[in-house]
Length: 125
Image (cartoon, rainbow, N blue to C red):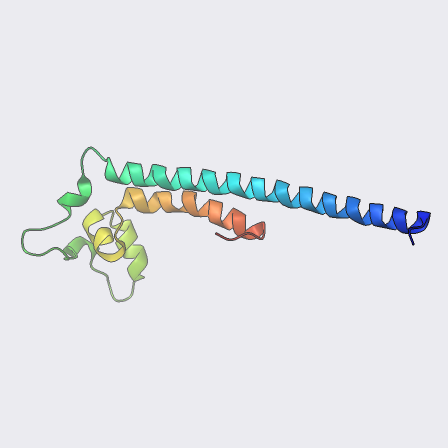
């Protein structure tokens, strides 16, 4: 039997469910916007990498072999290998090790900042 009390309880539960549904929809919309922004940034990086007028990454290939590290990038055994490689500013060596030239490698933190922001918000891609 439907009483005034049960009707009120039912209406309160219905309103609470509607609020939760609206909050979930708002979070999903925000997440979709963040994903779209991340995709735009990733496509922009890809565009910059592929449409470089100088095509410098092709210059890092040598006639003798594709994967050679030049003398300037060789490491003193007492130094940190990664620091020496990065500070050598030699794109051929960095391309050989990471697949990125210095310009592309230095732009990576910009794109991973978005992933870090999503992680702190409790979301994942």
